[in-house]
Length: 145
Image 1 (spheres, rainbow, N blue to C red):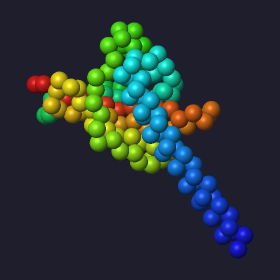
Image 2 (cartoon, rainbow, N blue to C red; image 1 turned 90 degrees about the vertical axis):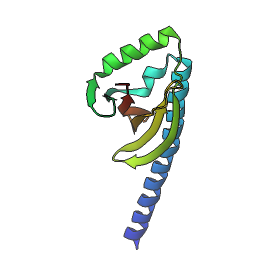
Image 3 (cartoon, rainbow, N blue to C red; image 1 turned 180 degrees about the horizontal axis):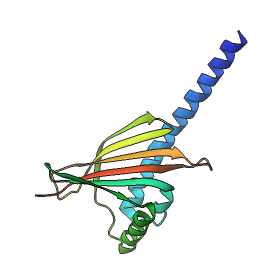
Image 4 (cartoon, rainbow, N blue to C red; image 1 turned 135 degrees about the vertical axis):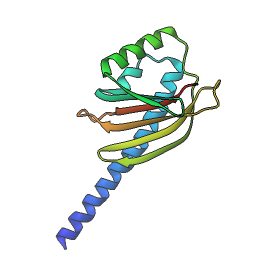
């Protein structure tokens, strides 16, 4: 009977932690979008120091995927923020799913001047300090042929 009670408590704690992570991931993704739109200098803080960043460019037929070192990505982000242009991207079809060790957020991304949507995939995990940060950032963008 004690074993059953312990298992029940562990399940409840695990479910509660997952629910907290899901709520926190929704808030973190909303913060990411807001920071991008307003060129908030805190944007780099949303990414883990060892974040895996990949971009895929596609013309609909051919694809080229590039891994970007975290430091290069953060440096580019800081330069873009300094320009104070703000992101005009429109995010739609946002979905949240549990994945090993975190919450995966996927969304369609479109620029207002384009009819084509790209794809964004972000994995949130808690760092050792308990803060939910982006540990995997994948973007697919479509370019004209």
